[in-house]
Amino acid sequence: MQLTFITGGIYKTDLFDDTTIRNSLDNIYTMFPHMCVVVKLLNEGGKPYILNKAISDNGMDAKNTDVSYTRGARSSDLYIRSKTMSWIVGYCDILSQLKNKELKEHSIDVAICSKAVLGSFDIFYRYVNTNYLNQENFMHFIDIYLNVSKPRAEKLKQIYLESNLPNKCDLLNFSFKHLLFQKIKKFIFNWEKTPTKRYLTVLGINIITKRKKHHK
Image 1: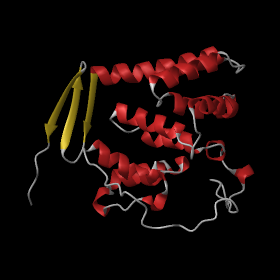
Image 2: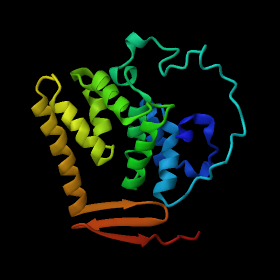
Image 3: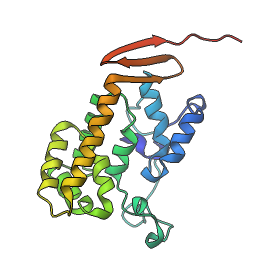
Image 4: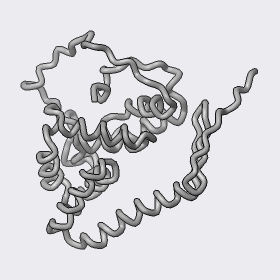
């Protein structure tokens, strides 16, 4: 969570390869494009060093300063995905690429319960219901649903089915079928690689091999 504040981390430049930079550009709308490098580090088995206490103070008067995510822009002219983006949606989006599912879901649960974000699961459910259960913002609902832990997803599904959103069965079936298809596809065959390892999945069997170093 601390790293969502852009100056909350110091990064090695060698972590920024072409793919990470591309991912960062693609995720500007999430408000946390700088965290793509954190996700890359964790996916490759690295661990960020966390200080016990802050070493700097931004000096911002948050109560009397415009700290909204759309400050400086004409909100009425923004694309809907940026206009209605929120901290928790952006956090779910940016962690969607985290390979460690348990870590991803735990991180999102901790963020939801943080007083700095929402404060509790009940407030989270009400927030999603109020802001994202409508046709205009349904993509945000899906982004949250696909990344939260199973208990959270089940509750969101229940809230969704009880909502007045038109054509909800069609939308729900589409999202569930899409998720199921992705899971089946990755179970049958999936191939990923990092600078140090290769990950191959065949019929649910995970094979990890180290990549050979090419010396110049």
